[in-house]
Amino acid sequence: MILAKVIGTVVTTISHQGFKRRRLLVVQPLVMEGEKADDDFVALDASHAGIGDTVLINREGGGTRQVLRDPDAPVISLIVGIVDSVYIG
Image: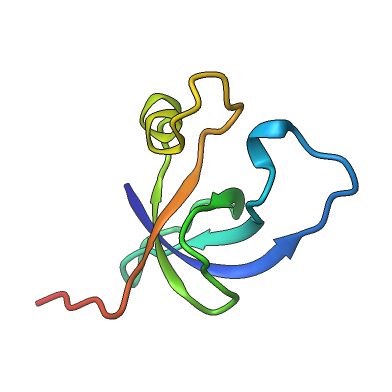
């Protein structure tokens, strides 16, 4: 699981059956100050997130397919929650 910020959307004209009725969002991983951020990536949205939202992402294919209840879904990254706040102390 990682925390990320939604920074964009992906529009497709044709998509895999496993993506139907779900959006693809571009996300940017969040890191601690001074750390190097990983590259942005695309995640399937299961939580109705929007641009600017901080989200919790499952980045493991098997767990993602379990959440979707689709053992054949070609998905690695799935947004599973919207984070209200983060406190690091």
